[in-house]
Length: 205
Image (cartoon, rainbow, N blue to C red; front, side, top):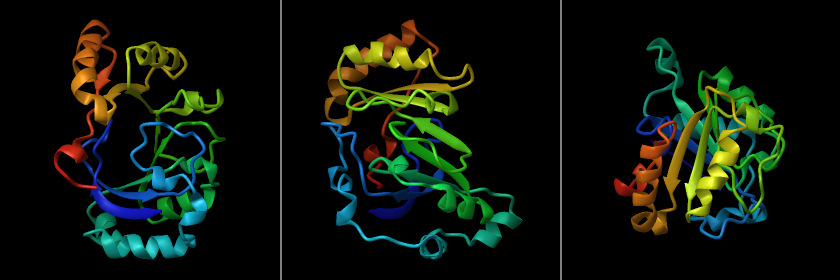
């Protein structure tokens, strides 16, 4: 659907430079989704893996070779839509071969493919994660839309690995109402941390 070089605005890697690849196609159907244009994959062009890599090298400020020399491993975030609707083995292998750190943001509703340095699992009530995907999460990020979502969050916190990072994130349009609830919840349950959509506050993609 689109690709762009920006800052990661959410979760564990918030504030780091990251190249985003947003893939078209999603059957999860979150009512509050802010990229509904991504849902129909057929509306977007298809690119070969080598074409994606060429475009990345043009847009990222330093060349890949410079990054290797400086021991910098830049992040590439594969997102959607729901990226796991696609087989990501070839794409992630090529990215890692070029020295990129591969991150994914997924609902976990489809089988896991690809080779990942970091998996952010964001489970959705509209289509729950596959049980076999959940244990691989490095980060659990639950969007809070209403009070019942805290129970949903705990349901998956009990299933991820003990070292998985736990985040609660207010749904953007309801942030004024739910952020105080999240703050109170984290104070009572300090295993959780707050994730804010920083990119929206600083007006970057």
